[in-house]
Image (cartoon, rainbow, N blue to C red; front, side, top):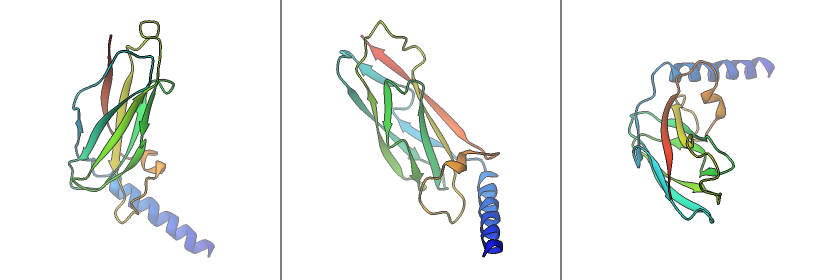
Length: 144
């Protein structure tokens, strides 16, 4: 059984390596360039963005934020088939506008190809190692 599990691990590693030797295709986001929150900031705001896999391959995606105290994203990761889209809820918790630095706040979408034949379930290891990962930054703008 141990030899069989070693073969499976090696096979999975080869699958991941092959999927990651092809650069991930494009995604689209709506909005395309930035996310805007409007005052007042004494209550939680939620803004929805759409991420569309415009490539011909299945991708895994993960969302990062520069300020985890203030910004949240749900769902934070997932898998999209070709041409599939997902709606993400970007939330901004209450904060003291003008008293906190918001200049560098942004959401980053990272994505990579999934291994051929992999289940449609997100795996963090797709983003580790030498594989190609693409990124798109969406700055956050706060209107007074």
